Length: 239
Picture 1 (cartoon, helix red, strand yellow):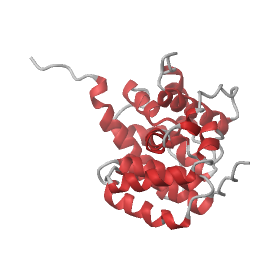
Picture 2 (cartoon, rainbow, N blue to C red):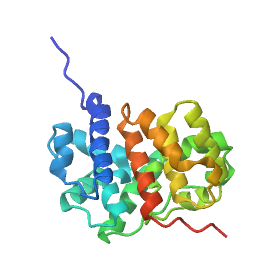
Picture 3 (cartoon, rainbow, N blue to C red):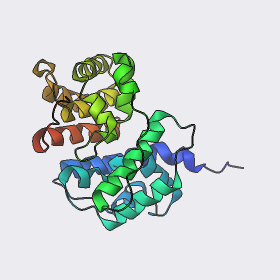
């Protein structure tokens, strides 16, 4: 007798397929997503718990086209993101990555809709004190929060460590860790003070060429970074 397939077993593929749809929207001129587009990308109903979990994993990136192009989010996308936010509140013992991901999704919704009260930000004091290799690892995990308009202590802290994030980017490329490189490249596209000698634009092209086919999240982060490089003002250096 065959074992039933757990919903969780389909989550990695659902995340990949949905990230691919979002990356295509970022590269395609700002056509924002709708729930049928997302659902169709993974062959699921917009109300399927698997798709809701997928959106929670992607966090604020579920709304990235609206955020990065500065357009209104489709109502169906907002409803789906709200369902994901409410279905998976972080427990008290949640990791920093999980807590920040939840906050980012909630703040993206608030930014786009004007509804709700801004939630308390999780701890970000570690951004100032982490050794650069550990900082690179943690900040790459939180790349969906590297987006104009979503102000956070993470972005403020990152703006004080451009050289260390650049070191992390170079190391990730050398290690062929394309997802980490793409995530760090996204932060570097947002913050001031990035050395021109880093060659960020060429680096992003290379990361996309090498890693996007195997991981749609690489494509998503690189497309977001490239879009910020040409359309969004760089943050001011912190005082």
